[in-house]
Length: 365
Image 1 (spheres, rainbow, N blue to C red):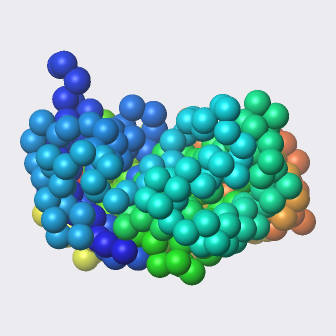
Image 2: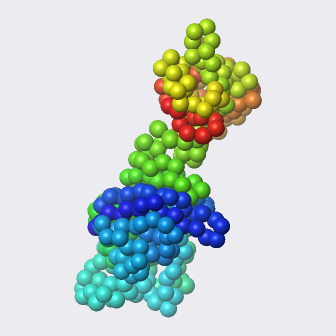
């Protein structure tokens, strides 16, 4: 297998900059996920690595070899498209065997590879069918299998699980990740689904408007978002984001949340960091739903909130709380079931909160 390195990649379509000065590295045997909304540049980057798009600026390296001018066939990559691209006149077996026959692989080895991959993808019973007799999910698995049997240097996958049903998609996430580890395949995977990215990726590149907002492990991206976009895009439910203002009151550093809806005392160390790094005193406070807690009675640093709605999810409840004009989502045990309109006390884990500069949208802490 091989590593993939992208240096200062820029790709334009007329006046639209699809990818802007992007640099990243996917190491040998690593599973990297490009995560972002539609139009953020993730598929364009993937196609540039594959050779299907030519970058306007920058360089692409596979196994330390610059491949900018190499045609796709000479890059030793396998591309799994969001759409199936199967040969309609061939059986599933022949579709999967086609790339192996093209390099004159011995028939017994072709049969062995197809047997192994079809077992993983659960398509053994489909091998004699043509694509017209397959469901959308089955065709997607065949397209995935055709790439997997090749064992190329790099797998490039553009939302390959999109057309599967929820149960099969969940199972295939685990199977695909396990297979990638078993064969040691360098893999770059495109998705807009943050659950897929978090559960599958060794490293995640969060992209927006052609720019890599943050590149890191799932834990780093989730626990230490580098920007307001990353904080709001990664996580389910999305991070609670509240307007606030930093002040010094009675010699203490405080955050005034909303229109004086509540006040949080913070450490002087954090206060100094805000003074040093923030554009001005206007900030955005971020806190995840699992880092907000409800209590039966008031205590220090608790805030009164109104229960707006309760969303029971079986293993947990999501409680929407209203504080002034602000809404917060809180994760609780399923046994916590307050009434709508009830006033309850809640508190924020200040060791787990995040602050963002309102002007630059960059993280402060």
